[in-house]
Length: 541
Ligand code: CAO
Image (cartoon, rainbow, N blue to C red; front, side):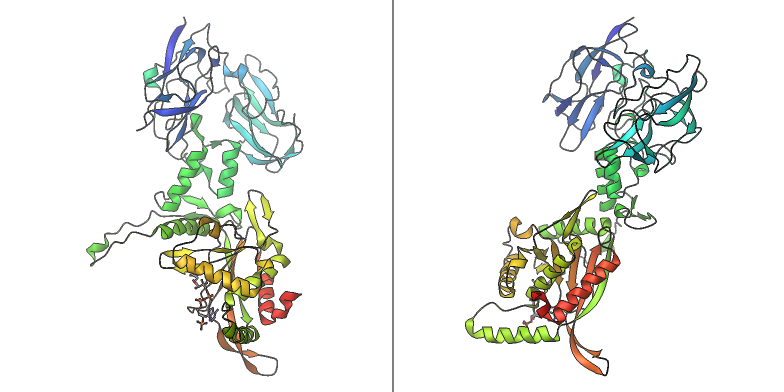
C-alpha cells in the first residue's frame, strides 16, 4: 500500500529562514532514507537535510534560494511496495567511484570478493588507511580502505553487507582496479540488517540532520546530540575531510560527527580545532602535521576560569584589535608548526665599525641612519638565495618556492606587534633598506600601515637588539617557514687560537618549521648568516 509522506525540515537548532544553497532532488527521483535532499546554510552552519523515508519523489516544494525553517515541507514522497526504491544491496552505488561488480551473493549467503572499483586512470595506488579487520561486520557503503594517488584520495566502500572473512591488503599495499580487498561472508546469518524499505517513519519523528546521525539506516532513529565516537568505532568521513584532518594533525576519532550516517563533515573538524585552540574543548590535537616522530598528542585543558578579584584589586582592559588578531595567529602557529629554534653567535665587530663609520660620513649629508636591521635583511636574502627551502611555504603536500625576496620585520607598537614587509630586498641597497624599514616602523607605530604593507613576506626578522636580551625563541610567522630573532650585541671574549680577543657578538635565534627544514639545514643557514655578518664582503660574492 503506497502513501504520500511529507519530508520536512527537522529541528535545526535556533535557526530560521535558512537559505537552501543546494538541492539534490527532483520530481520522479527515487530516494532512500538518509539520502541528502538539500543543503541549508545559516551564517553559522551548513547542513544537509536527509530524507527520512524511502520512495519516489512526487513533489519538490523548495528551490535554490528558498528560505526554510523547522517544519517546512521540502518534498512529498510516495512510499510503499510499488514506489520503494530497490533495496540497497541491489543498488548500493559507491560514493567515490562505481563499485567493481561483486559476485552477486547467493540468496542464502556465500563469500563475496570486494574489489577495487574503477578508479580512473590510476594504478598501483597505495592504501593509506585501512578500516577493517577479519571478523568485522560490514555494511554496504562502509569504508574499507582509503587509497591515495598523487592526484586524489578516495575511500573504497563495501558493496556488500556481511562478516569479513579475509583482508587481502595492508597499509602501504599498492592496488589497482579489480584487486580483491576483502572477502565477505554474506547471507542470512552473516548479513547486517538491511535498510528497511518499508515502514517509513512519520515525519514528526525525523532525526535532526545536524546532530542525529543514525547508526543504522532505519527510518526512525531518535535524535541525539552526536558525541565523539566511542573508542574503537569506525570513523566515517570523506577523503577530503580525512586529508584535512591529517593536515591539521587531528585524530578523527575524537571529533563529534554531525553529518548523515555519523559522517564527520568539514565543519565538525573546524569546530573541533577552534574549540581545542580556544580552550573550550579539552581534546587531543596531534602534534602538527605529523612532523614530530612518534605522532604524540597534546592534551589541552580548558582555559582556567579564575575570579581574580577574589584575591585583590584588578582592572579589566580589553585587548587591542592588533593583539586579538596577532594572538590568534601566534596561537595557531605555535600549536600547528613543529618548530625548532637554533642559536648561533655572529661576530659583528667589523660590520658595526663600518656601520658607525658610514653613519658618521652620512651625518653631514642628512641621509637615512644605517641600522643593523638593514644589514641583517641583506644577509638574510643572501641566505634565502643559498638555501631556497627557507624561501618557501607549505601548500598541502607541495612546497611553494618563491623567486622573490620580501622580508618582514616585527615592529613593536603601542597597540601590539605588527609585521611590515620590505619588498624586493635583493634589489635594494642597505641605505634604501634602512630608509624603508624606518619609514614602515614609524607608520606601524602611528597605526598607519595598510594591509599591503604587511603582506607578501617570505621570511621575518624579529629584532630585540635595541632592547636587550641574550637569546629567545621566535614563533614562525606562517605560512613562512622560518624566522630569525636577534638580541642585543655584546662584547665577548673569543679565543682566536692563541688568545682571547674582545669581539662584538650578536646572538642569533633562528626558528624553523621542521616539516620543511631539518636541523642540519637550519644550522647551515645560521652559520652562513653569521659568516656574512662577520665579513660583509661575502654578500657581494
Ligand atoms: N645590538 C645592539 N644594539 C642594537 C641592536 C643590536 N642587535 N639593534 C639595534 N640596536 C641599537 C640601535 O643601533 C639603536 O641605537 P642608537 O640609538 O644608539 O643608534 C637602538 O638600539 C635602537 O634601535 P631600534 O631597535 O629602535 O632600531 P632598529 O632599526 O634596530 O629596529 C625595529 C627597528 C622596528 C625592529 C624595532 O624598533 C622594534 O620594534 N623591535 C621590536 C621587535 C619585536 O617586538 N620583536 C619581538 C617579536 S615577538 O614578540
